[in-house]
Image (cartoon, rainbow, N blue to C red):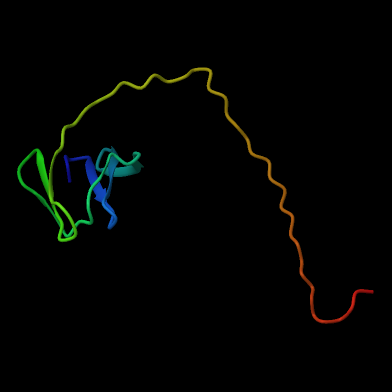
Length: 103
């Protein structure tokens, strides 16, 4: 846990994704996964050192010490957003090859 609403998900290939918990009172209403923010070596151990630092130890490469800083960014909402609809046609191809010649 980076803070009370954010956790870092570190995959076994070393890619680090931030995941934010969106809460409504005491209930988690949504998980929001942002794009990858870093890549490190294959992690063996992950430990929080203090309030701002996370140690990622690796036996496969160099270990690192991350400093986590919370940054808030204002996002402008586009009032003229256009919703897109995708039309798909479900076409099923049947391979009826039971060994008999076609008639």
